[in-house]
Length: 141
Image (cartoon, rainbow, N blue to C red; front, top):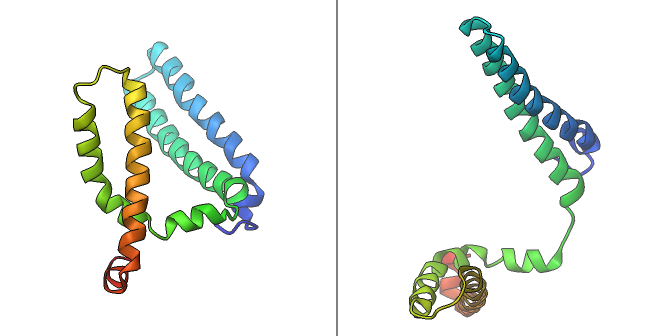
């Protein structure tokens, strides 16, 4: 899983393998079923291609993230330091912000954006305040 490991160096191979095996799963098994192949052969082909597709997809995504996405981002490290606290407290904020927006007529997408922005801001603020307390920070961090 290292950024310079063998998986990351061959990320393109694994992405191509992921796409190819998934298409084989979709099209070959449909073709076998349409040709009235005996159920045992069709089921066996489907099971083997399903396992290969899942494996190639997992390796492909691990390789892609290891090679391309796994770069240092200081602002994400900052958020990661209090993400667990945000996770714990966000339920309260989501519930109340949605409740306050309940009778306001707005498109659902706009309500989502409003709730998301307010909840992230309040959760971050709460996490920062909690981390200022040494005892709570020790317990939650």
